[in-house]
Image 1 (cartoon, helix red, strand yellow):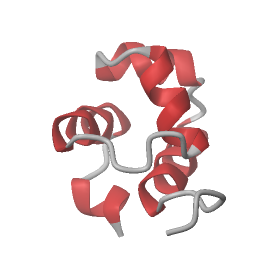
Image 2 (cartoon, rainbow, N blue to C red):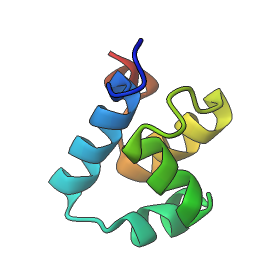
Image 3 (tube, rainbow, N blue to C red):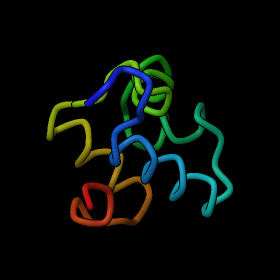
Length: 70
């Protein structure tokens, strides 16, 4: 994957977060991950976050891992 393309995970996290009306800061608090982690994932700077991180974000968004990874 080229560095200018965002991962499907980053796109889906941003989409689900927007649908819920959450800021990146609010999501970071709900998911118990750093704000920096959320911004890096959504910007594509961290294209492959750990499964633990994705699971925390999915739980905070009320989404499944599958929802965020496909």
